[in-house]
Image (cartoon, rainbow, N blue to C red; front, side, top):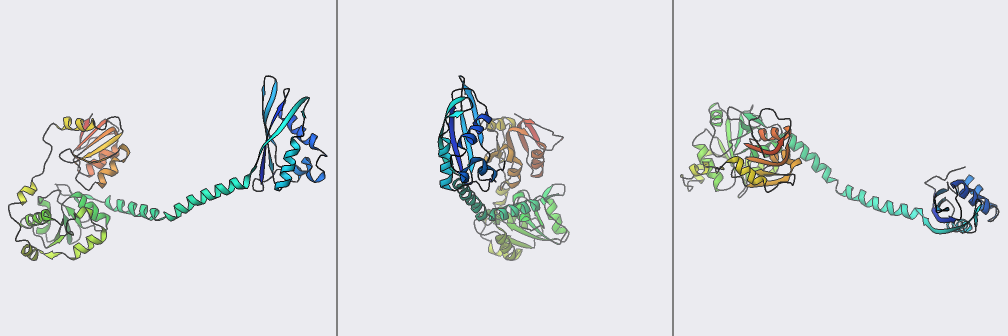
Length: 383
């Protein structure tokens, strides 16, 4: 028998039936063909319609309950609306199926094309939304490229300072690791971080070796105080300052370029900052670090997330920088705008997390258990 192509189906006829005795599927199909034969004329003969592909494969589902047969019939039709309803009505004239009395009732006739149209509309909306949000793909691509550039961060010298490519003659000196990461993301590779407000000896030696150092500081009073302190301890050629009220780590690419283009010689900078008191740098160098029992402190932090499968990114005073899913810990550590001192995880700390902690100078990592961990310079604490 010919089959109706799913593409050409217009309607689906649904019918129920009930017979007084036990039946099998062929009995029902046979009754449909046999008892409608000659009823509607040659043009609507069920067997011929199926041979021509105007009626599809008849599906029958039945079950026997207390010796009686009940079930449903589905007939796909490629006929037009009026012809389909005539064929459907003819089914209700069947009064016997096999050896038993039976009754067939049409439940509904469904316009398959309407269902398809609804699907098309819903799907078109989804596709339109994805098309309109196509910029997200560009954004993702940009993010991946930025992360790849940031991943090139190196450790320089005995003090393991965060740095990019220092092979050239010009070097930009920034305060911390987050500043270095931001500049690397924005294609500025000749950068090194001080890891704080105190000038490391490694950077002072770079100036002594003839490198042209540009100190790039935050656009606030603290940044200018740091600059005065560094100038007094190293051979700095230029000073670049972030826009007022902004930190280097939060600048966009254009803002970074503009700030660096507006750098000024050290002498000019000092002339503009004579009003800044000289007794402040020492205070800036003081950094609040948690002074209590570190394991006890981290256990206290853990109690806030126990059972949540979350993780806490903490600063040097064990204050929460950010709360993230345990699956996002590595990324959160690398992308933190603030220096990460400790991490607490309600779950397992994998090797990738330990590696991220080592790269970013995290001092302590606490977790409920550790997996595939070798030796590490990070202090690992089991909760």
